Image (cartoon, rainbow, N blue to C red; front, side, top):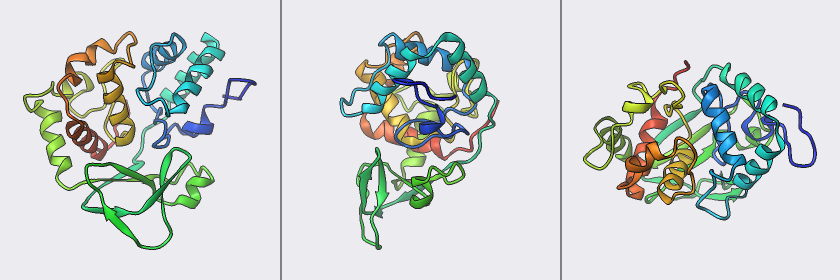
Amino acid sequence: MKGRAPNLRACGLCHYPNGRGRPENSGIANLPVAYFIQQMTDFKDGLRNSAEPRKTNTGLMVQIAKAMTDVEVKAAAEYFASITRAPWIKVVETATVPKTRLAGGMFIPLPGSETEPIGARIIEVPANPEQTELRDPRSGFIAYVPAGSIEQGRLLVTTGGGRTVACGVCHGPDLSGIGPVPGIAGVSPSYQVRQLFDLQAGTRKGLWSPLMKSVVANLAADDMLAIAAYAASRSPVSR
């Protein structure tokens, strides 16, 4: 979509023209049209915000949603829904990660080969920082996650682990989504954890958010990390 001053920007500037997105925002390729439109409505109506006040691009999305017409939102939704999903994020379990710095809302590896313990973190970095700086739509990301988190996440996603509901009930057995419910397979784990946290904190309270209220109520931070690690490790499926 062509940008229009002062508050409307081209979607591809942040999410890329192919909709694959970056860790500081989200992938929007192949989202259901109804879901896309509802999220833009939630942004516009002040029903979707970040629990992290420093997450300034959430506020930017609110401004963009308010500046767009219903026709423009629908056109954008239909365009991105038509794009086939493809592998974009490689999930790697590890005990140590490259030392990084924050730039543009994401982690960038420092020059050299210094590492540090990953701890209880997800460190999502560009596979090729130079290409990502140029916003190359063919250069994806690596998500480092703690060792064992994918299996821990598999148990939570597939069974609920006594703390939540199996994700496949709404997101489908292959996590590709059902009806207006979006797919979560292959989605940035950084983004997924932010959304689980926002839902738990109550800063996402749009039309469909109550469906997730009981799902996230008893999740600890480690649970969210594990769920996101497992879901991100699955092959993305288009529908």
